[in-house]
Image 1 (cartoon, one colour):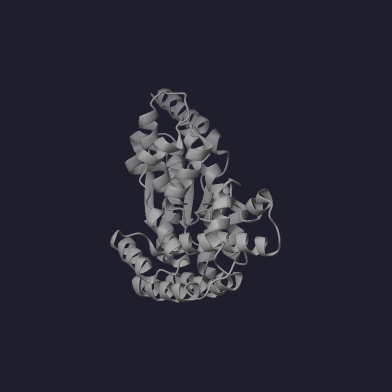
Image 2: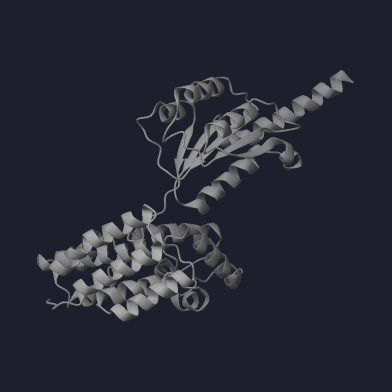
Length: 356
């Protein structure tokens, strides 16, 4: 009987080791960033690699770690042997230990990380970037792996295009370059929406090997960021009435205020770069596209027309207002009031006498 039990144990442990080879020997992870969707996908992947589904209810713990007592609870749980096969996963979510960490908690972290059983994996997650000066961050760097899940800034269209292209390939969806550009315009840096729209295109494409065109994407994709782009255009034209109407619409549809602000900032950043370079006598569309981080140089022609009637000083005056908009929203100011006030300010600047 004992021999059979030993064989069963060794069989389970071998299975556990084989499963964990894909993760390497790392048993402590710290995931951080504002891309909640990508971070959650990584968490799910880690969980699938670590936990035997039959024992998931026993070997998986998600614990709020925004307070020291939550962290302590999670560390204690990580020292508990798992039931059945594979390992135990303890997820300490929303932790603040890389922003502030007492000496007492640091000692507990060090003691646990140094003695963590091979049968346990600890995952810590946070939205904020770890403070590299803190001892707790250095402790994590020494014992574990830190992964970033930050959103790509909306104005980095080339990186967004690469992200869309890779995500499409992962789902077996082929897109023309024009279709990729249109999808980037439609979903921005919202990875959750990007995944949803790509899965819709995947169903449409079925097993077709032909790349989907921009026309097909335009017909199928919900362009949630289009109203944000329209808002930026209304501001550029100094059309206060239309701009405020778009703000009302975006707020009513629960569009995240920081996403609205990021889209506007991205647009004005691109326009400023284009205007700055043309004011210095640069006409090479490839050079302008590279400096403004526009993935398709053919778009430069359209951008040139958009900024033709705006003076460079006007665009430069928008920068402090846009910066103040972002800071105010991040500090928790009332979103609607802040957006309305800043949109009016921007429209007043861009409604003044223009010059090429």
